[in-house]
Image 1: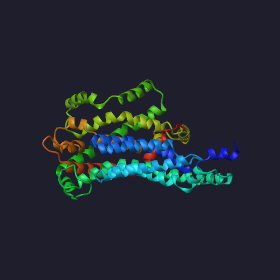
Image 2 (image 1 turned 120 degrees about the vertical axis):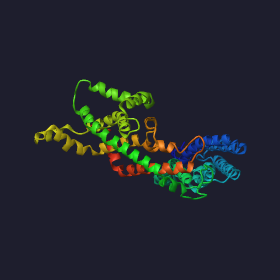
Image 3 (image 1 turned 60 degrees about the horizontal axis):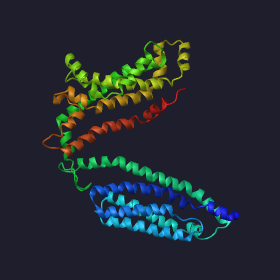
Image 4 (image 1 turned 30 degrees about the vertical axis):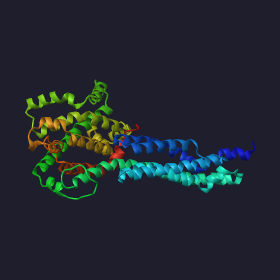
Length: 415
């Protein structure tokens, strides 16, 4: 066998390499999408979908190879069949965005395969022997187009994840802006602000908002007041029971909160803290404290001890070292810990429902749950209130974004 034949067999246009990878992804997605046809009991589309999967698998196995014209012609035929089955699936169903996306996983791979396999580089490679110069040009072309195809594939994948993430938000926004309390209907078919007006004009909503702010801010401040010195002590000092205490903190996190619900209730009742902000703040601090201490300890471990020793040589006492050296360096970790403790109290439902029996003491999660009763569901009001409740959290994440990135990455490496 000549050296040209060896190089010919080794070389393949980048279109063939990309198709080999992305056809696998298309096969997997189309097999998953068959479950929707099964759930809908749509036998026609299920038959078309199964046929499309078979053709995709066959096309993947019979993609063109060097000097094999019949495989190129067969691949073109299979690509056209895949595209036709996708179109048949589309016209046999209701035209919606979701159905168009479903059928695109047959139509687009079939169309791209048809275009690429019939392209000049692939046709020349699959139908005749190439010279060394032509193969060198093809390899250079592959290198130029490789990054472009990788970027396109990465963006397509990321777009799908983004759509999956924001689709529930779009759905709940549509419910909040639709008149009435129905969950059905097309997205964007009607518009009304009645639900937002009702929620914002309700005295109960602002009472729940005030209660949640008081409890969340109180939990955040009290938790940090305890967790910051505790995390520093666990990081810097060796004392009796240190390892046992850290293990106990970790062990507590393994048990669900409902286990301690009854003891909590009995303690709060005996102390007269039911239907009070202080009772919830204390309960939330106890549950959030182990995580806060662990997070802060991990960050304090990364602060070089040499900085503290230098401050001591400059005449600082231990308290000044802690307040003037360690705390300023720890602001990103403290911000992350504060945000997590705030969110834990802001979103908590079970303890707030158990400890508070008065509507005037409800927090937002309990208040939102009261909008759904056994006699009727105010879905529009519930959706509008949910968006309003989520808005402060979203703003906090945007405001603390820089600190979140620094704080979450800083404790990963010690030194």
